[in-house]
Image (cartoon, rainbow, N blue to C red; front, side, top):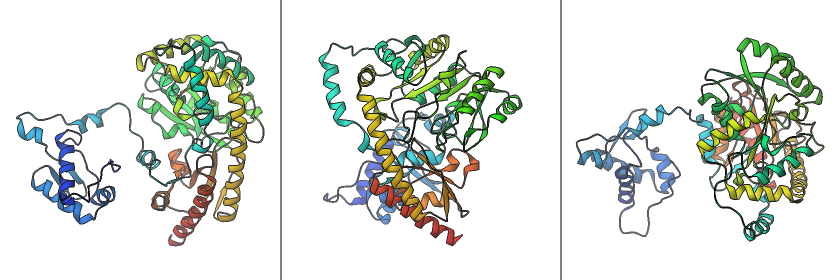
Length: 485
């Protein structure tokens, strides 16, 4: 709410506090700020409106006198009435109660803050898990789009599993990874996150337990939890999930499903070894344990390709394989895929049709064009070269500024460096201090409560200049907080 997109007009003859008063009153009258809504703090409003805090206080006092706002000690200022309820005898709906009653759990507060802060002007995003705008293929997209429109194409809905031509091209792409499949066993989805949502509501019962690596990206989203499932983390080491623990955890917690990111794990950057991949497949077959393989980073190797996906050695349909173009080509396309047994794909396709009636037909045609030509492979080569440069810059900056106060891994691909801070600090204080300096961090406790002294650093998003400057400033903040503690 703090990014209001409006500021009072300083050239107007109407006093600033009066403009602010009318703006807030209009929000209430139009039902945008309903009864019970907690409005931003005086300090936040002053910053958003670019005025002195006293100006905001004057406006809020006037609205309070009119009976539209009420301030409570420790509870902030809330909307207590509006013009509609003053003019009618019926009480308007309490939308805040509906918001709290929704079955889908909200993001944790830190994630909500990060999602907003990512769009602050001039922010240095040191944890963002996507490619820099500098690495996205704008010029190639300009050339591809006219070719698509020059040919006869449908602007209507696609079939339930997605555009057949795209699924055909994906079979060729997957074959290069060692995965042999057919278009009928592929479902096009709007990114890998939607794939997880479909699986959570389409294949599992409420109360089911999902086993996963700990830490894991999956802890930072509430896809399975909102569908009534529990997450149980299995410890990892430098080679991936500790496979010797999987059977015990499955029996102890009655695990229904195993979720893994074997290649360039999010957030640790770990690559699971070939030996462990084979052991996992043997275990899953032995225990009849279905497996979700999230391979959205698999194409982003820097030094050498990772071992073959788990799906490449799946002879009995144990693995649901997830892929996406969001991390490699364009987050805005919103194109991902699920590969699995046909009955599962049919079930998930039916649910997807109920949710959104299929992913964008235009995006699917664009994705198919990329995969059908050599453009995608050439783009991957470019991205890998750039990630190598960025990784080197990050490593150099870390060695120069954080040596002695932190340790970190050396990623061989993907986006992430898993950094452990040696001084015992409040990660909340570190996050807030960094944000006040224009640096946005992803703290480790997002991905596991036990990872409280960690940061997920990304060398993929920030410019080289911002990356170096951000790491330097981060080191200064850590030293400052360490001295205070």
